[in-house]
Length: 250
Length: 300
Image (cartoon, rainbow over the protein chains, first blue to last red):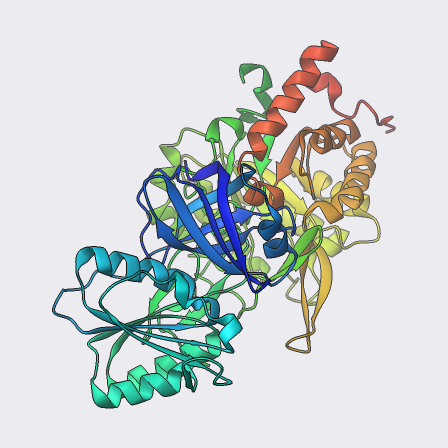
């Protein structure tokens, strides 16, 4: 059964609006980067879908932004509290060959699933480069990235940390220097759209993790669909990870 | 759970707790989420004659105590359902109710005809929230249209017929009586309430059907009133999110209850509702049938 009640193990809040929370791992299967958990927070009517940001046999990490009453309530939970979760849900980023050049591109809280991808690549010995942009230095969570021998380019909209640029501007420059074989990305829809159009033009395979308002999270209600070349596809079940060329970017 | 096995018209139900159409997929997708022994039957999402893409997103809006949807009956169509899903559902050994709807009556009649001779389907639930082709008015909102629709459906099938009623009417009893007189075996009350949602970010108004705990008092009242007028059994649904609320629906006159929106949010709701009903029956030493309508003075 994918429906579990699990204990909150620990929690840290950064700058009053970002949360790293660990809960006990009672999953029946090993979660993969890109998958999410659907959490009943008690603060809002519907569950909240949140990316899995890390995994160990003992605990699951989620990293999220406090945006509304649901995530606010979740951020207030104390250690030991039991939370009601469904998971792991959705598909995941595809496996890649070691010799492939890969860029991980994260915008804002889109860093959450990318943290999990980075962990996995460090374990597997894949070489990769991270491009990570946020609004200001107070919105950066780069200190949560794993240690390792990989290249990291940080940018902020206001220049308060890293380069003063959007992550798409950085990506455009990096592609000119060295074209990757594949890109994994997560972030706001507008950013993913720019990335999707850029990668289509440059003929780069990109996989994007989409967000949407989600009711069931299980594929039954058809509420979270996105328009694709295959028709309406469910972000919760057919995604959240989609190949960039599948999405009809509007 | 044996004590909760009931008969609803000619249907044998494992429990009086049913999923609501539209929240249970095609019926087989939630096997690793919900314990099926606690649900009385499987009920599919509404199927249309032809495959249907549904409405453009957004499709879901959240309220404090409920939600609004505008899915637009996205589904694979009756034929693909038969080819791809029916065998799987048969093997689950549960009573199977197939929900049928569509954009016009003729398509609904075609679907009924097609499914009528298919083994493994125990009942057809007619989602009457489709327009009458001549007038473009919703069938479920008019007793005459409802009568004609059910009369023809009755002619086309021997399967148990369930009429799913809309709450968006002045007097639900008129429509319920029309369905009964035309030959419906069971009423299902109620479907979602028409609602609007204003999105301040997009600066746009959206229309859809409202469900969840916020509609419970109105749904309860409608089942209460229907029970006084009709003789066929009623599946009561609309906003049930606890065993207590399910009992209230049964006290009002429901012979079985539907849980939809809240079942999706709390997958163990069916088991909890069953347990509360069972505890109540054990505590009061009553049998299930004697509780139906027990807080409603039936007047014919």
